[in-house]
Image: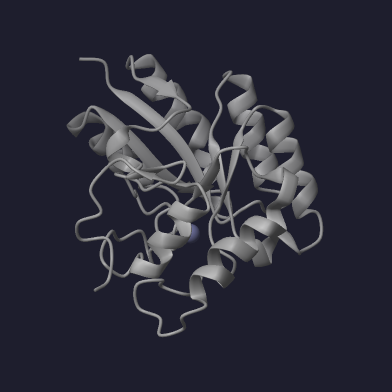
Length: 214
Ligand SMILES: [Zn+2]
């Protein structure tokens, strides 16, 4: 069975790091999805980098406004509006036509802290696609060792959606990692498997069991 890999980069762009990611991807003819934090977009140089990513064929999604509110834990009823809708608004034309949203997981952990019923309603009504993941090699903690964990994830499942970060020195390993997986016959794609996108364009297509607070 062909193993598949979809690349995602969260928490950027960061000048001096994202350029490296874009270079590495361009040289290999690959595209990825970049999940951007709203407050970061307001810093100097960030919008230009996101625009460059779009111009080079990458997809751009919404990774919350502040990257600090667990939508399944907060008591603020306006949190989905602030963390999802306002951030999408800030992205404006930089965002892909399909409204990709990735919640903040507090370290990449899937669980009921990710979403509230109200947040799910916001995603459904707003026509968002909820993009989760099935590989978090913790590149931000281990800039050298993450590719080995990523390879293990790719080898144990048919289609891996990997969370990497273009705000970390770990990107120095990206070219070597990609060359190795390509040489190993892994198919690198831009789209996402159903199991990682339980809401597509506002329509519930998969299970949200264990991902929504009660
Ligand atoms: Zn993040």
